[in-house]
Length: 276
Image (cartoon, rainbow, N blue to C red; front, side, top):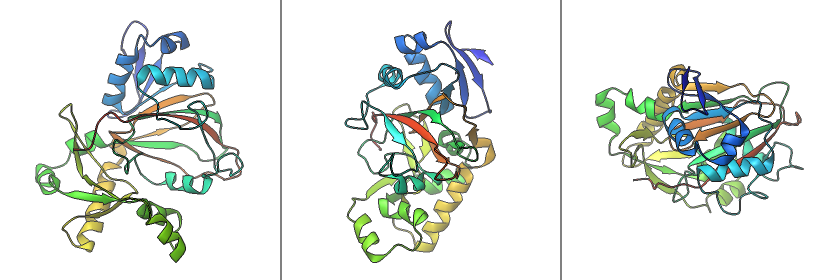
């Protein structure tokens, strides 16, 4: 446990990822501690605030102190995350969130961060897991760092959909293949000089290696990055506001019943750094 500033109390929940930040709502809304929160977020990957009774409008206001909202996302900056198609028309697509991924892998600038608030929870399941891809890279043996240093991976929306529907029909495959692919490095070298692994469900194949080598390498690196020492599992309580650094983590939600009523309100911060 440590004090980040006069207004913030920081409680680290695992050695490498996840911190609770204890403060008051007025401090968050003022933006006085925004720079400190961003520093903690980059260092710890995930921060959350508990027991503050934050409204949608306040959630968006807090997000704006930390960065720029993604344009035209949700109503007033709020996306309703639910497996109920009456609440979210993309509910079927959201099933892909149950597998390790990072957001915006196909965008020019991957999302900077996401704010997620628990409105209604499932009685079973629905926890969210995060892994620290900075630390996972740093702990790789030097020989493996050299092995992957210059490798590039093609990411595609089609690949991620096989997790949701393993036996897609021809028309479904044709639909997803209309989406543009994107080639990214396996190792993201950030402006800060730090490096993180770029993996996840949209990772389709590694360029210039065989299909077999590609599948094995991507699975091996995913397994490495999601070892227990790099993972924080968030046990949600109603009203929790959680923020994750999308550029240095992967995440997934654990399965929960589609009819559970689970509802999360999400606000997305636009990317600030291109993939190099």
